Length: 73
Image 1 (cartoon, rainbow, N blue to C red):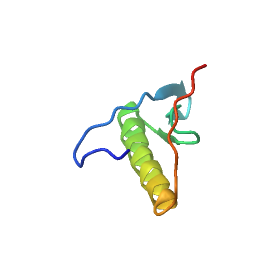
Image 2: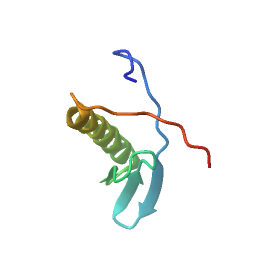
Image 3: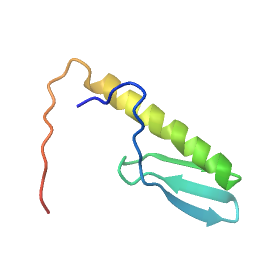
């Protein structure tokens, strides 16, 4: 199901501080990671990574049959 244009979707991100800066990932989007020298830079970079990830998923699934299901665990 696609979201209306302009709707804000929130994703939880996990931030790790290291001697080299900040590493950040989005657990809901497997493999969606980024980094930055500062916290602000890392957060801006993960926003861009999330946008790119979503764009690529939409592109890869365009004109393909997909099924959305909920699984209880």
